[in-house]
Length: 208
Image (cartoon, rainbow, N blue to C red; front, side):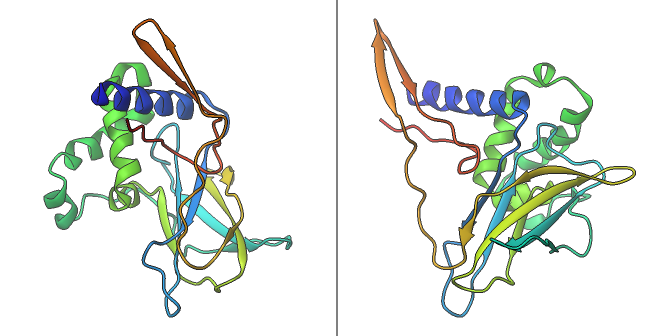
């Protein structure tokens, strides 16, 4: 039952990212933040996984109009996995290659492999970073409220991927749980439903 529930959740998320017109840009304060070192983590989910020409990330203080570009070079997929990540996740090498195939093939052709790919992206920031869809902002001021904007670099300009919800730089805090959570049993099947919030969550876990 636990495996089925887990697969259901990932299938739901993959389907939502592929079909939705909204690409989530999710932010959080790093769990290891301290008074002397504060980092905001940013992760986003592209329907095609990898931005061919890379991405740019911008930040602004809430209430201001201008955006500050944070990356000096485009955020792109690495040429290869780092040795440490390859050792930590032996299966990551195969999915690293699959990530490129997603942009070239219909998602239905990849099927369950795509679900596994997204699970690695959700669970491992180093793997997401190797695909160019994760960034750490270490230049924030504690107590300041920021928004982040991610763009995809095209042949002639930039295309907006999404804008994050506001975040106050500081200590790590867990997100509030999902809202409008409902449980319904139909014969031997238990149905779970909740309000989807693309600005707060990329993926969900279900426990029983």
